[in-house]
Length: 265
Image (cartoon, rainbow, N blue to C red; front, side):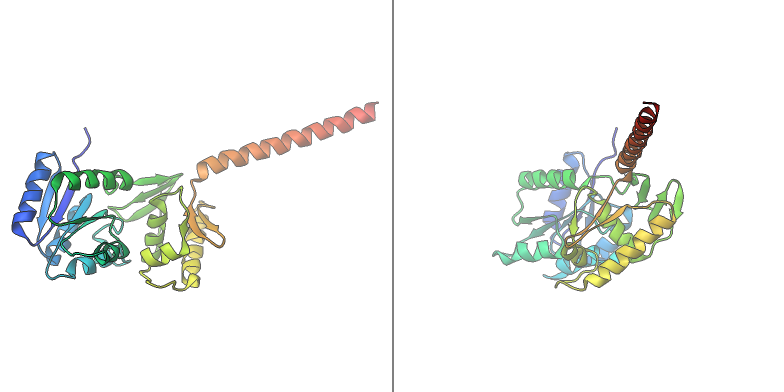
C-alpha cells in the first residue's frame, strides 16, 4: 500500500482552511494546517507532497513565500524547491493568475473555492509532479538524487555539489526527457525576472558536468546549443554506443576478410 499524499493547507481564513482539511481527510489525504508564513516554514520540515497556498499574513505574503520556495535558498533547503503549489486567490482580474504563475505556482484556483474542482486540479498537478518524490530517491540512469538527504550518488558514491549545482541538477532531473530553455533555468533556478546572463548558467552547468565526469558519470548534462540544457539517461546511450562499436568491429572484420579473399584469388 502506498503512503497517503500529504497536503499542506496554508490559509489564514480559519473557516476555509478547516473546511478544506476536513474534505481532504474525507478523501483519504493527509492534511496539515498553516495560517502564517512562519507556520509554513515550520510545517515545511515535514516534506508535504503539495502546498495549497492561500492568503497569509498580508495580501502579497503568499507570492513572496512562493518566490522564496522556488529560489535557490528555499528556507536553507528545508523545503523542496520543486514542491507542487496551487495558489488559492480571491483577487479579481487577469493579472492575479499571471502573477501567481510567474512566481512559480503549478495551478491557480479562484475563491470561493469549489472543492470538487480543487480536488480535480490537485490530482492533475500530482500526476504531473510525481507525488512522493520526497520520500524516495529519483533515479536518472545510474544517478540517484535524494531530496530528503540532499545527496546525489553515482553508483553508490556521494557527489559534493554546491547549492546552485544541486538546484540546477534537481531542476533538470524533474523531467529528463525535456530540454529546459536558458530563460526557464535562469528564472526558476536563479530567480532572474529578465533574460539574465547566460554566462552564469553556462558556467554552473559546466562545473556540474565536470564534477559528474570526475565521478565517472560523463555526458549526463547535455547542452542543446542555442536552446538550453537537459539531463540525459546515459544507460540507453551506453547501449547504443556499444552497438555502434560492435558495428564498427564487424565492418572492420569484414574488410579484413575481403582483403584476405582478394589475396587468395
